[in-house]
Length: 255
Ligand code: ZN
Ligand code: FE
Image 1 (spheres, rainbow, N blue to C red):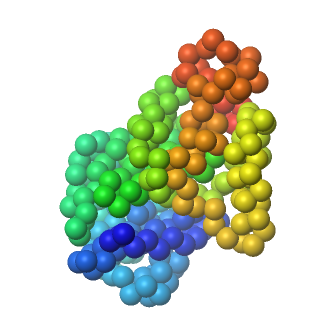
Image 2: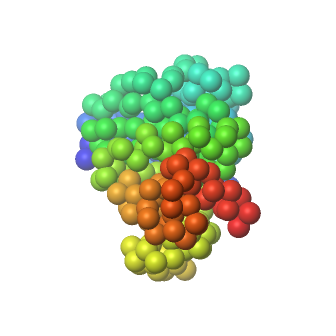
Image 3: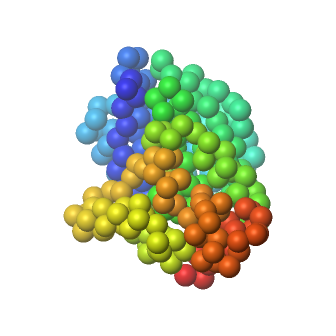
């Protein structure tokens, strides 16, 4: 793969992401949760970012924008719909935008739900997606600015990416998501196996990300609205997909 990715922890449970195109040496950041760990990652890898790609306006994703811009003179790219709330933004993108990056191209997928303008950055050639707070391992983002049908449509866009697409997320929430997922989908053997792996990783203090689209389709209840066993468990055998999704999201909010 021509794209190299350095994932590291910031704040309490945020992920920082530094990526580089091996052929051209071009490097970029996805979100700016905290300055010090980002500087450490740049130092460790030697990859000097020229662009900062922002997924959404929350402070735990943009806090270091101005400090990093000052230090590296980097260009900040973010969602058009949230430009007023993103410090230092230079260029805006929206669903369908294509951004050249080294020998790759980054396609922007509009994935509102967690926030009204949230975007996902997808590199189809490298088969990588940076979904931040839209899709988590075994979870999805809280619906802070949108009703369930909006997030449902966004998750459907991610669900149809190739199954071997690596998905990087905004937070290490996987263990608590796993405990909830078992209440929705208790008979899913793939989920049971995955939860054991997650518990082992967290016991060693290791990250559970990235995940893949295929793994999420098999185990993430927020993508499994059509699954007969889940529908039966919820008593929603004949409900619309979007209503099954909304019910699962509601239960997670109260979990
Ligand atoms: Zn957020
Ligand atoms: Fe976040």
